[in-house]
Image 1 (cartoon, one colour):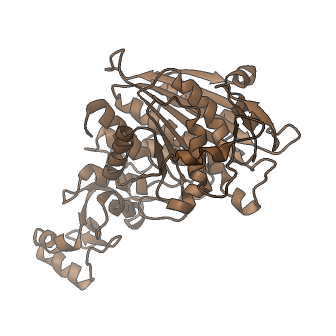
Image 2 (spheres, rainbow, N blue to C red; image 1 turned 60 degrees about the horizontal axis):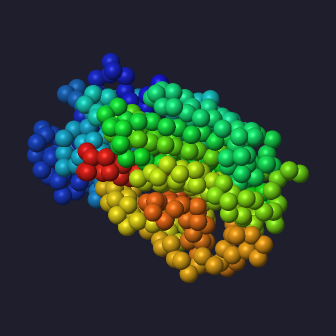
Image 3 (cartoon, rainbow, N blue to C red; image 1 turned 180 degrees about the horizontal axis):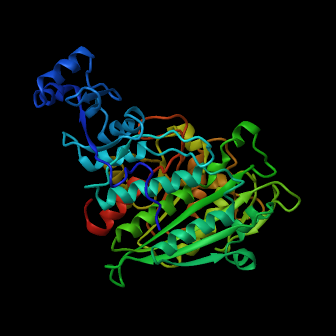
Amino acid sequence: MTEPHAGLAPETATPLPLHGVRPEGLAALLATLPPAIGALARLQGFTAAPGKLLLLPDTTGTAPAGALLGLGALPALHGFGAAPAILPAGSAWHIAPGDYPAEEAALGFLLGAYRFTNYKTKQNPLAQLSRANLSKRTLALAEAASLARTLINTPANDLGPDEFAQAALRVANTHGATTELVEGAELAARYPTLALVGAGSARAPRVVVLRWQGPTAPPAAPLISLCGKGVCFDTGGYDLKPSAAMLRMKKDMAGAAILLALTQAVMQLGLPLRLELRLGLVENSVSGTAMRPGDIVRTRAGKTVEIGNTDAEGRLVLCDLLSEAAEAAPAWLLDAATLTGAARVALGPDLPALFCTHDSLAETLLQAGRAAHEPFWRLPLHADYQSWLDSPVADLCNVSSKPHAGAITAALFLQQFVPAATPWAHLDVYGWNDNSRPGRPEGGEAQGLRALLGALELHAYGESP
């Protein structure tokens, strides 16, 4: 079963009201409370600045009866993300009505309650949220985000290709999806470029293919196909990364983690869609059997690729997955990957780069991102740069001959494996929080999860729920 979210209070707990308040609404809120509370707020200088807390005492003055949480100008999602760490440890709360969407506030609280403590011998309890009145969607998103974050945070010695594959199979089995676990000779035949990436590791690559149809979806329901890059650790191969650049390479499977989490949420909510998920799970290592610069591989699509750089392995993991996924003519084909540092140079860690072949799909994703406070930024598939991927000895090189536009040329490489008629979007994500912010603890992040779920809901229902 799906693991319950750690931020949920026991059903036996008696939750206290948590009032979110903005500076412009503080006076009106205080007027609804006993006069002594207003006096207390003024005495303590509470101004409803973001992340500031005022505990409201009970009639004995010895225990809290509620709390005011300053939101400032933050959206509720982020404002309430600060609550679990600043409220009394182990206390239970419910979201009081206010000038914010209660479900967004609740999701922010649960996202802020996540901590990766699997390897900690000492646990530091946080405040928790009552599960009463929480929507199925809020719980599904919180649980999916926790799944992705934990997968990304788990060190590579405990999460290799097989361990990731088993985690995906557990999610599939919980929700009645059909699965294929592809390995060995079959994997080499179906996904030759992915096999080449994994050839240097003692931990053999795996591909998981998951298929699911919503319980209310008709046989002709639109097919959504997802492809995730799951490089469980990336040394760079023979084009070895410097040690500082390798420190976070356990997160190079974030694209696969995010799309597995998205799939879990879709199945949990029973969206009226047909869904296929392909996860390319592999380790890029250095050994006598590893791929070398100058090697040439024939892809599933028949195109040949020269390896110009062994550290540009993510596009090799994805290209055969995209080719196979496109054979079913999906209504949407989406991939997610921690693909290029160039995207981070251009957009920073918070804005995933979006590349898309169809404007209507791009606009749906952008709209859903804005609504979820999780924006994407669209970059062009600039055809004039395609020639930068030319090779004198193969159909393509896996890296550009120019030092510019690395995120664009990586996307152009992937585009070669998607039919022009297929609506395709590629997300180049960071998948990590460099430092802790409200609702976004340091470490792995399910970047784009809420936006992607919103986009699928728009596709399925014609509007967000």
